Amino acid sequence: MNPVLTPEGQRTRAVLSSLIGNSIEFYEFLVYGSFSSLYFGRLFFPSFAPTTATLLSLSTFAVAFVGRPLGALVFGHFGDRLGRKTTLITTLTVMGGATVLIGLLPTYRTIGVAAPILLTVLRFIQGCSLGGESSGGFLMALESAPPNRRGFLTAVVGTGNAWGLLLANGVLLLVTMLPDRQVLSWAWRLPFLFSAVLVAFALRVRLRLAETPEFERVKSEGAVRTVPAFDVLSRHGLLTLCASLSALPMFLVFYLGSVFSLKYASTIQVSRSQMLTLLAGSCVFLIVAMPFFGRLGDRRSRKAVFVGGIVVMTAAPFAWFPLLGTRSLPLMALGFLVLFAGFAANYGVQGAFYPQLFPTALRYSGMSISYNVGGLLGGAVSPLIATSLLAKYHSWTPIALYMAAAGVIGLAASLFLRERSAGPPGQHAAAGLPTAEAASADVATATATATATAPATARS
Image (cartoon, rainbow, N blue to C red; front, side, top):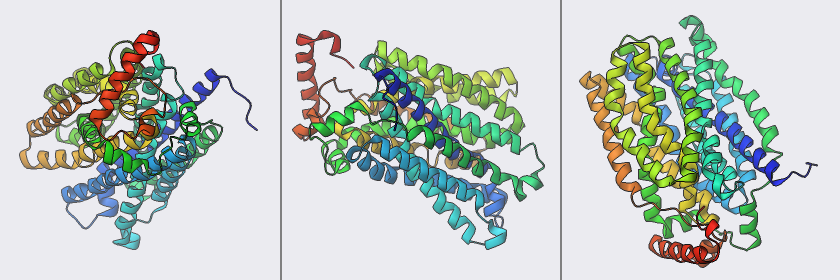
């Protein structure tokens, strides 16, 4: 029987559990991206030319992003119906199981074409799991936090992608210290098998977690929806589309910076160890910067910080690539700092910004669908497109233009997004508001009422 915790203790446990789970999920997701870029072409597609094999390998990386919206629909449904805790335990278990099975998978030389097929299926399962986990972790922190600390605490959870990338690259660096012959023979399996230890630890923490107070209130008010994903798409379709498009630059910058950069390093005569060191330094920067921007969003305007991050990400590639081209470690580090500064601002507030675009009873589905559709559009094929552009034009300029175009789209879409005011958790869902416009009118009414009665709580 779990001991009774104070609200502060529950909040700390919710944030810690979400951070650990998010870190492990991103470790498992990103370690695949690293190995698909460097080794899986030879392990699972050896009958193709090297460039083609790499592109096919990166295609299996993209498959997970196709699974993410499906996972968002399924796990978002159960997250809004059954609760955040149960759903997050399930997503963590599914992701861990798929990752361990990848580590046990026979290669092409052993079972032929069945190997890449099974790899693709397991990668798809990874994507489905992350589609539910990434949003649920933010909700656990958000709905356990006081209104004036939501941005900061969700940003702490958001550092999980940096911790996951740091851990994935650290393991990759250790593995790649071995001769390629040994890596291709057996050592590539170790990072995937290691996830079993991480998942066991995370489950121990997550099983002791309590459900969030806001979801409990939604249940007690009878505001839980029968098919929340349908309600999101039918009543808030335009809002969901705009939220998805606003996430494009965030996903492009993260996956090109963390996955494609390893491939790009070889074209500019930068060693793999140097690039991994630069990425490790970038992770440390993100771990510090994201909570700073999350706190800034609490004090100022989350939307302003979010939009400012997109503006920086739109321009950053035109500095990142030339600085990498200098092959000077300090200047390359500056390039990554420029690239990830806008990402840190954008991602630092999105964990509190996206959920509060939707009614509480639809938050899990609303955030999961919009966030992961954005991931499909912005992250799925970005390393593949960047690799193809580089092979065709032998220049970074088309890649930078591709990233800037995504930034412009994201900026335009974000202008239509608006957080909802604080209010009774079930009020919007229970009222059955049919459109985003009606919801905005309700927000304005609630804001006016709150201002008149309790100014200190008019803004979450």
